[in-house]
Image 1 (cartoon, rainbow, N blue to C red):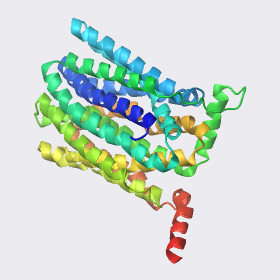
Image 2: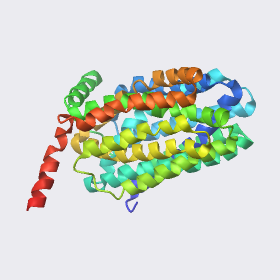
Image 3: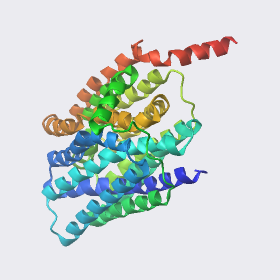
Image 4: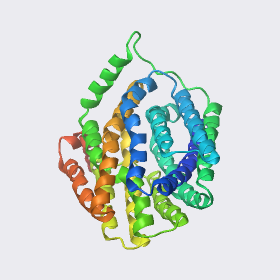
Length: 408
């Protein structure tokens, strides 16, 4: 935060994350009021994810061709514009569910550029020694604003008016765009002259799938995201409202409690050194996060139910800091946008289908049984990676160096 560029980026993204938290509760409760269906809430989440996943590889190639700062600026401005449009339609009383689906799809397209660009810009504005701190600061602000303060405020605002919550979300995107506009220009990435976007995408894929720790990690995360973490954004509001009978304001507070613990985890991880056994430590965190879905299976009150977001958000942050730092130190700068986009593409590739399947299965089985079954199944890939010598080979030199240091 002592440096101007990281300070501006984090300030803008923190306010935007606050708006995302408000908007998440506002949109979720608005859809439940309109349709009274967990399936429709799942469709809304899935349709946002689908175009994002389909466009991520293109978004990564674009990120390696243009200034990452300008791409972030365009994404924030675009998302602010379409969210403002929804706010106006809601104020006029002419908003329909199908228009919310169109909004969700457009939002996902802007996300497909934003996500690789935000990963790629980080090593451009901070040195390698500050990457772990910067990679922790982002999740810290996300946990505080998006998962704690934002949802809590969103529940209160939505109890007054869903339109008010969505309008606040729109304004925060425009504030973030202003912060990006105030930043110094970032350089256009270096690339070979005369190469097409298709050939650059192929080059990114070759690099990615030649790196064992990277592709095995991303593919293994797919099931966790598709069937546990991503569906929770649709299933938990339904579970809180229809199984635990919480008020709208209490739903926001319940999400805020989980966000507070995620923030504490991010703050803690910002002060920890990256471990020598990066893969094993990372997957220990993520495996615990996945298995925390079992808390929903036994939850009969909100105190037990919130243990799932508390443990899962903390575990995701701890593991994510290690993974992002590995990506930014092991991947060449000119390849970072493509590698990051492939990471997101694989990690979230099945999320749209998973969210819809989760909605259907939860509707049939019940939310409790769904989380018990899927948490156990999705923890298996992580347990395999923990014991795989080949995948952990990337850390062999670091562990050997640690042993030599102790001997000396």
